[in-house]
Length: 157
Image (cartoon, rainbow, N blue to C red):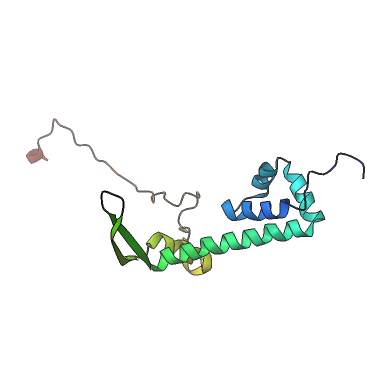
Protein backbone atom coordinates (compact mmCIF):
# COMPACT_ATOMS: atom_id res chain seq x y z
CA UNK A 1 0.00 0.00 0.00
CA UNK A 2 1.31 3.43 -0.91
CA UNK A 3 0.88 6.37 1.47
CA UNK A 4 0.99 6.84 5.17
CA UNK A 5 0.39 3.86 7.43
CA UNK A 6 -3.09 3.70 8.90
CA UNK A 7 -3.76 4.92 12.43
CA UNK A 8 -6.34 2.16 12.78
CA UNK A 9 -5.60 -0.27 15.61
CA UNK A 10 -7.79 -3.38 15.49
CA UNK A 11 -6.94 -4.16 19.11
CA UNK A 12 -8.40 -0.92 20.52
CA UNK A 13 -10.41 1.02 17.95
CA UNK A 14 -13.57 -1.17 17.80
CA UNK A 15 -14.05 -1.08 21.58
CA UNK A 16 -13.29 2.64 21.73
CA UNK A 17 -15.77 3.38 18.92
CA UNK A 18 -18.41 1.28 20.71
CA UNK A 19 -17.89 3.25 23.94
CA UNK A 20 -17.98 6.60 22.13
CA UNK A 21 -21.28 5.62 20.54
CA UNK A 22 -22.68 4.60 23.94
CA UNK A 23 -21.38 7.72 25.62
CA UNK A 24 -23.07 10.28 23.46
CA UNK A 25 -24.55 8.69 20.36
CA UNK A 26 -21.55 10.03 18.49
CA UNK A 27 -21.77 11.07 14.88
CA UNK A 28 -18.98 10.19 12.47
CA UNK A 29 -17.60 13.69 13.10
CA UNK A 30 -17.50 12.98 16.85
CA UNK A 31 -15.79 9.65 16.24
CA UNK A 32 -13.25 11.29 13.96
CA UNK A 33 -12.47 13.91 16.61
CA UNK A 34 -12.17 11.17 19.24
CA UNK A 35 -9.63 9.33 17.11
CA UNK A 36 -7.88 12.46 15.87
CA UNK A 37 -8.61 11.76 12.20
CA UNK A 38 -10.74 13.18 9.38
CA UNK A 39 -14.37 11.93 9.11
CA UNK A 40 -13.53 10.41 5.71
CA UNK A 41 -10.95 8.24 7.50
CA UNK A 42 -13.66 6.91 9.82
CA UNK A 43 -15.74 6.11 6.71
CA UNK A 44 -12.75 4.26 5.26
CA UNK A 45 -12.27 2.28 8.50
CA UNK A 46 -15.95 1.31 8.52
CA UNK A 47 -15.65 0.03 4.95
CA UNK A 48 -12.35 -1.78 5.53
CA UNK A 49 -12.77 -3.23 9.03
CA UNK A 50 -15.94 -5.21 9.69
CA UNK A 51 -15.33 -5.39 13.46
CA UNK A 52 -15.16 -1.58 13.58
CA UNK A 53 -18.41 -1.18 11.62
CA UNK A 54 -20.14 -3.73 13.87
CA UNK A 55 -18.89 -1.98 17.02
CA UNK A 56 -20.26 1.35 15.80
CA UNK A 57 -23.64 -0.15 14.88
CA UNK A 58 -23.90 -2.03 18.19
CA UNK A 59 -23.01 1.08 20.17
CA UNK A 60 -25.52 3.17 18.23
CA UNK A 61 -28.27 0.56 18.68
CA UNK A 62 -27.71 0.21 22.43
CA UNK A 63 -27.49 3.99 22.95
CA UNK A 64 -30.70 4.55 20.96
CA UNK A 65 -32.47 1.78 22.88
CA UNK A 66 -31.44 3.24 26.25
CA UNK A 67 -32.67 6.71 25.26
CA UNK A 68 -35.93 5.29 23.91
CA UNK A 69 -36.44 3.33 27.14
CA UNK A 70 -35.79 6.43 29.25
CA UNK A 71 -38.16 8.54 27.14
CA UNK A 72 -40.84 5.84 27.37
CA UNK A 73 -40.52 5.66 31.16
CA UNK A 74 -40.85 9.43 31.45
CA UNK A 75 -43.86 9.37 29.10
CA UNK A 76 -45.82 6.78 31.12
CA UNK A 77 -44.43 7.41 34.61
CA UNK A 78 -42.48 4.98 36.76
CA UNK A 79 -41.59 4.04 40.33
CA UNK A 80 -38.08 4.31 41.70
CA UNK A 81 -36.60 2.90 44.87
CA UNK A 82 -35.07 5.42 47.28
CA UNK A 83 -32.83 5.05 50.28
CA UNK A 84 -31.69 7.46 52.98
CA UNK A 85 -28.89 6.56 55.36
CA UNK A 86 -28.63 8.25 58.76
CA UNK A 87 -25.25 8.36 60.50
CA UNK A 88 -24.22 9.46 63.96
CA UNK A 89 -21.39 11.92 64.73
CA UNK A 90 -18.85 9.07 64.43
CA UNK A 91 -20.03 8.28 60.89
CA UNK A 92 -21.67 5.00 61.91
CA UNK A 93 -24.90 4.02 60.22
CA UNK A 94 -27.71 4.17 62.79
CA UNK A 95 -30.74 3.91 60.55
CA UNK A 96 -31.63 3.29 56.91
CA UNK A 97 -34.99 4.15 55.42
CA UNK A 98 -36.32 2.69 52.17
CA UNK A 99 -39.31 3.83 50.15
CA UNK A 100 -40.69 3.88 46.65
CA UNK A 101 -41.24 7.20 44.95
CA UNK A 102 -43.63 7.53 42.02
CA UNK A 103 -42.47 9.71 39.13
CA UNK A 104 -45.59 10.89 37.26
CA UNK A 105 -45.84 10.87 33.46
CA UNK A 106 -44.52 13.91 31.62
CA UNK A 107 -46.75 15.17 28.83
CA UNK A 108 -43.86 16.50 26.73
CA UNK A 109 -42.16 13.10 26.79
CA UNK A 110 -45.44 11.43 25.80
CA UNK A 111 -45.91 13.85 22.89
CA UNK A 112 -42.33 13.31 21.73
CA UNK A 113 -42.84 9.54 21.85
CA UNK A 114 -46.15 9.69 19.97
CA UNK A 115 -44.82 12.20 17.40
CA UNK A 116 -42.06 9.75 16.52
CA UNK A 117 -44.02 6.50 16.76
CA UNK A 118 -47.28 7.61 15.12
CA UNK A 119 -46.47 10.78 13.15
CA UNK A 120 -49.63 10.65 11.01
CA UNK A 121 -51.80 10.83 14.10
CA UNK A 122 -49.76 13.02 16.46
CA UNK A 123 -47.38 15.30 14.57
CA UNK A 124 -48.37 18.97 14.61
CA UNK A 125 -50.20 19.76 11.39
CA UNK A 126 -49.66 23.02 9.51
CA UNK A 127 -52.68 25.32 9.35
CA UNK A 128 -53.90 25.21 5.70
CA UNK A 129 -54.92 28.90 5.91
CA UNK A 130 -51.35 29.86 6.77
CA UNK A 131 -49.46 29.94 3.46
CA UNK A 132 -46.32 31.82 4.51
CA UNK A 133 -44.79 28.92 6.44
CA UNK A 134 -45.11 30.55 9.86
CA UNK A 135 -47.27 28.19 11.95
CA UNK A 136 -47.86 30.85 14.60
CA UNK A 137 -48.95 33.67 12.25
CA UNK A 138 -52.32 35.20 13.16
CA UNK A 139 -55.10 35.39 10.58
CA UNK A 140 -55.42 38.82 8.93
CA UNK A 141 -58.03 41.16 10.41
CA UNK A 142 -59.64 44.11 8.62
CA UNK A 143 -60.14 47.21 10.80
CA UNK A 144 -62.24 50.20 9.74
CA UNK A 145 -62.08 53.45 11.70
CA UNK A 146 -64.62 56.28 11.24
CA UNK A 147 -63.58 59.66 12.56
CA UNK A 148 -66.25 62.22 13.43
CA UNK A 149 -65.56 65.88 13.52
CA UNK A 150 -65.06 67.24 17.02
CA UNK A 151 -66.79 70.49 15.95
CA UNK A 152 -70.16 68.83 15.43
CA UNK A 153 -72.20 68.17 18.57
CA UNK A 154 -73.47 64.64 18.95
CA UNK A 155 -77.06 65.85 19.53
CA UNK A 156 -76.92 68.05 16.38
CA UNK A 157 -76.49 65.12 14.00
